[in-house]
Image (cartoon, rainbow, N blue to C red; front, top):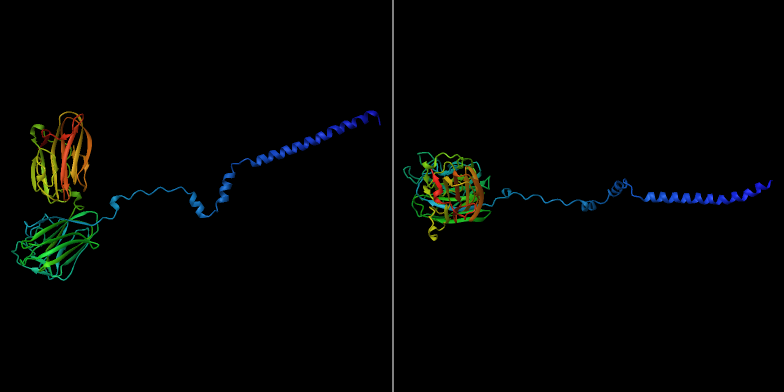
Length: 422
């Protein structure tokens, strides 16, 4: 073999180990890279993780749920109504006459038409009115003015009453228990025996109101304000218990006939108007006046500040309020604004009141509450604006004050020189 061939053999052996080492290093690097790539988080790993835990116990799932928001509060109007009963007044002036003033929703008269029977015309909101206990019907004379008429516009009198030695328990089931009712009982001691009795209003054996009554010889009307389903228990104190009739009026059923504020049109020139506001007062009325309520007193008022007027004698300098107990009033006319102005009006009342200007309700202070004030601001043009103010009191303390505050001036009663009526 030639010498050149023997010299190349060692050279070939010298690069072979390097080649092997390079291949080993390359393989190791590829393996390390693949391992690093395997450990890198992949997007599809998230749903795979959720799937893995989807069969965990339910209690663990519940812990992961978001907290639910509390449900909205239930409106007050949907809460169960608490039964109430309050005495309003007694009346001996009308005898047995009641047409158009009582029983506008319904009535029961205990009369002469058959032993133990009575004619009835119940209001739609009464599910039941039932009398329990031994009793009988008393008959008298058709000429006796204490006897109830057979109906509101009838000329024939029922001249009767339900009598009992054991008293009565009258159940009244009201299907609209949130609305107040005027309930009137008529009791007449036809034989003038000196009957005395106790009248209780009950709800679930709780006494809502109790009252001992007598002097029934001329016939007495007892007026109450009642809310909810109640029982009326009449208990004999001396001689007998007696009841001639029950009469209902519902504030709820009268809502469609409520007196409404006039529109905002000015119907007269200032020179044709008279000083002061026309005021109508309604004695014994529970709630807002209706179209068929007739005022007990009509007069002109030059101020709308009455103070807290129970008793009126304790407030020198204030005009006395004409009535005590439940009542209502409407003041109507015009307010003269001397110049364009931004005026705040304040209405303070016990119980409710609302002030209308230009045919729209401006200040709303309605409801059953103690002396409370509400106010609103109005931008008014110079000139006349229709004013209408309604006030009502359910009983107890009474109060009504109206003030204004023109922009940049002090709060004062509305001056008399700015109040007019037709």
